Length: 220
Image (cartoon, rainbow, N blue to C red; front, top):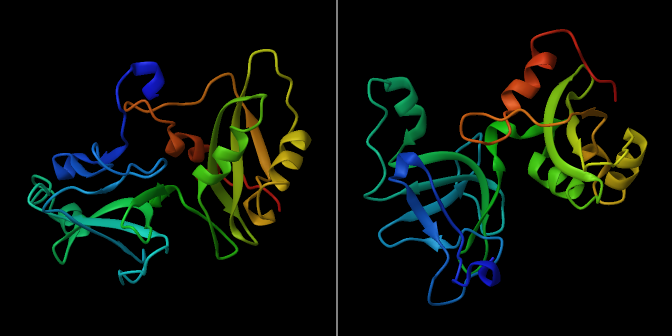
């Protein structure tokens, strides 16, 4: 990116509820590719367990929580939502992340998109990144759908590259070489384009709707 723009490009992170920046890679210093960098001045950040809220040690994946002077006091007129987001002085971002030994944070996925397969966690972004390595895949979005035996199972929405002729067996073999078996999709939905929300991001809620609103299930 720096070669294209002619400027130094650094990754950062923020959200509307934090006005909106909480992390950034140093402009003058060590910038770690693939991370969102370090908390900005006067900002604290930590990783906590999604269920218990207990703070997790370095390297563990959990929900990113932040606190600082830029964090909101609450959602206007929405007390329950405010209490869910702001707990014990920390803003719960809803993002799964991890912190390394140098204090750099990396975003893994959205908590609401996490898939639980037989009690095991599957982060859609990891599966999507594998499919983006396939030369015939233009776009990929991974969701969790109901499964009577495992609770959920993995389904992939795939947009092929122009002219590419993909079949599920090819993608499954590709994924099995790179992922643990429980992370491999059990079904593939081929589309000419993905569904996007108003923010320009894949609308996984809309993709999940046909499965969760009916008796449609995937075996496996």
